[in-house]
Image (cartoon, rainbow, N blue to C red; front, side):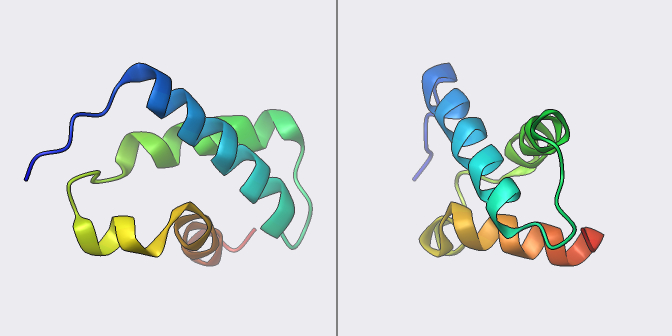
Length: 70
């Protein structure tokens, strides 16, 4: 099944990921940097991967932060 991702949904995902990045960052990051990082993460998500979508945005953010060690 192919998921149609609309611009409003992507904007919502970016906002939620920004909040999660600010929340889960161990070193603390500025909101400006979190917004930029969120846009990067959202642009790289495979929205058709049901296993990944089942994990949720918080898991994606935590995994991303572990990979870049922020």
